[in-house]
Length: 434
Image (cartoon, rainbow, N blue to C red; front, side, top):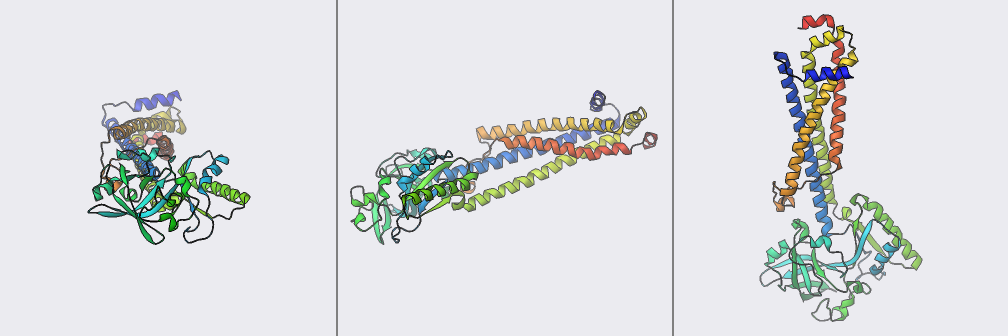
């Protein structure tokens, strides 16, 4: 092996003859081509991965991973609905390690009205013990504090209705076919930069929502104009009740987690003799169009990686062939001295391997420099109304290491074929070739 290494090292040295200079130039071009391909591949994986991670986080910051709802409309069905206050205990009792929190909520359509404007929204009420960490990260003004009359709205709605912290808009909603109203105080304004999503996620912090799960809404509960009042009988009822389960361990494992939860709840209902009904949906099912769109990005990145790998391999193969053809005289001399074909093949494979290593170092250095620069300084900006984020996100992960290993392996394999041209070179014909 020392012999092959020594010869390969000498081949990298530039001599004064035109053929050596030509071969060296070719090797430099091949090195540049491979390095450029590595830069593109590293940047592509980091950007696509960062984009997917950011979008998923924006979805899950404002929505649970799994949502349990009433099996039927409680205002129309006599069938008993599940007691959602018991769901956290059911989950806790079954030791689901991949579930970090569970909380009851409610949702109902409503209309926000100011003196001059109005907007239709989805009103979301949450428990005082609701895990607000993710939502709090999206707060732009004010804070996410608990209060019986406090509400948090999106930046888009605040702009459209010309609302600011401390304003008290009137909120209209229906119950039992009648319009109800309530005046609430704007406590905070949030933005996930996912405006299409934000406008359907307005939050009201309710202190006692867990007590609002036991009875169906009726006219008596909503007597007068107070709506879901805090000083009337309607305080203990809600039109729609949900249970949110946050932060499943892995978004890809939701279906497994969903089935485990279903089995646990059914077992609880069976043992308790209850005939309650419920429905369950994961965030990937509820927002299937978004996740299908994200899956398309994986296809795109595979195509990009395949094309860039082909570019790198063709550059390498072309460079190696030119070097071999320029060194036929040397090959003939080595064979006449007793060197075997396999030994000479190793020389050129070692030469190409060093070229690959040099190109990968340069490519990764440039690629990671671009990624780190973008990650910390957000050099490349985006229009959030179009891309749902204000800058190009990047993510450094294990796929980048796998990329380098894969490119190295494929490149070495690609070298084996061209190296066999050595076997066709005869010492007696090298003079004629010259």
